[in-house]
Amino acid sequence: MSKRIALGVDIGGTGIKAAPVDLKTGEFTEERYRIPTPDPATPEAVAKTVAKCIARFEPGRKTAVGVAFPGVIQDGVVKTAANVDESWIGTNLRTIIRDYSGHDVYVLNDADAAGFGEHHFGAAHGRDGSVLMTTLGTGIGTALIVNGELVPNLEMGHILIDGEDAEHMAAESARDRLGLDWEGWTANLQKYYSEMERLLWPDLIIVGGGVSKSHHMFLPHLTLRAPIVPAELRNGAGIVGAAAFAHEAFERDEAKRKAEKKKAAKAEKKAHERH
Image 1 (cartoon, rainbow, N blue to C red):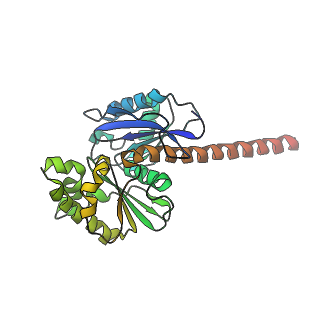
Image 2: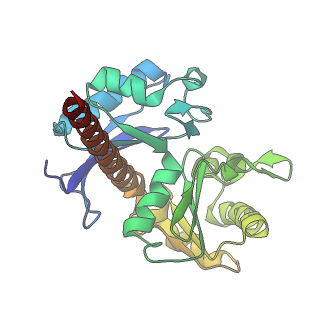
């Protein structure tokens, strides 16, 4: 893969998807590869599946690989696991995937990845102010981008509405689980997004996840202050964002390594001159 391509992997509740991404356009350079998420979705089972996705595209050592995960990630460690096995909590996601794939990776929350992708290549591109990214799927993922800066690990899918976890009544999965038609589900979404506006006052709301392809069935029926639009990258936002995030992190690490190497060489030269 060339330097302008990075690999993105998106771990979801039902599927693990991957694709190489053109970092200039945000487009996939090869067809997306998908493997069903293991059940139970334990660290070892998921890491093995992610390794298969990475191996499918044979990235070189200099190819940045980003992995998006449905939970809070701090310093590479999983802190929450609402839609995967609880044994993930406390697991170093970056380390276990590197161990199984043999390739270093950069990791982040899946909604953060989607927001990162939409900011770089999608509906939030070039937007100032506060942008709320939401992904409606097995759960509700949320990301906040303020004047181009990502606020990580925003877990606003778990706020309480009418005494209930919001994603239990407003995630896309709730439509089937509760037997709701589009009108009934939209009523739940109205409650959720009205609460988001009350708490966050976003200038723009973006809706991603698989259901975003059917945005015409619910978005026009929501009444909100802020514009609410479908993710331009649709369900590929997480893959694109993970790839773009990994590329930027890889470039920072490379620059840091070069600076440290240069500093060490300078120190060695001075020591040699003294003797």
